[in-house]
Length: 141
Image (tube, rainbow, N blue to C red; front, side, top):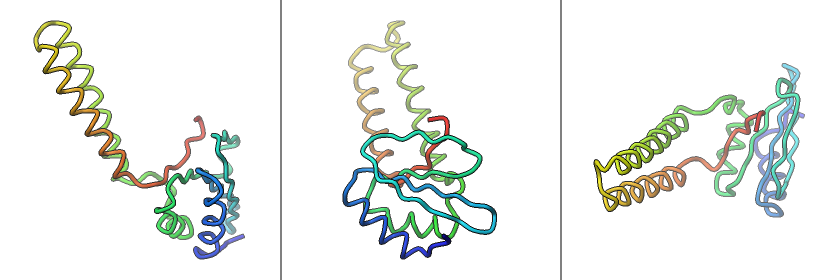
């Protein structure tokens, strides 16, 4: 209950060494905060989304930063950076579909299409690699 950043981090590192994923479940009553750390190799679905938040941690290298923000209560919403990167990825996906349509209409040839698709995939993978090693878990997922 109301743990400090160091306690959360030490427990998380211990559990994360045994699993590829670590779910951090935060419960609050407005005055106190409880944290449950759940290591899991498989995806977990949570119910009662109005009562708690869930964070999915996938990278060991981001643990310190994540738990500092969780302990300070700063991970209540997605960061602006993450929203911008996601918007860029969506725009690149739309560009790929547009290029496919133009190739279908014979406006561009297939070699140009393959170059565009290669560029878009490379750029999306690059954007994914610079994203933070955490993700707030959506309740509908």
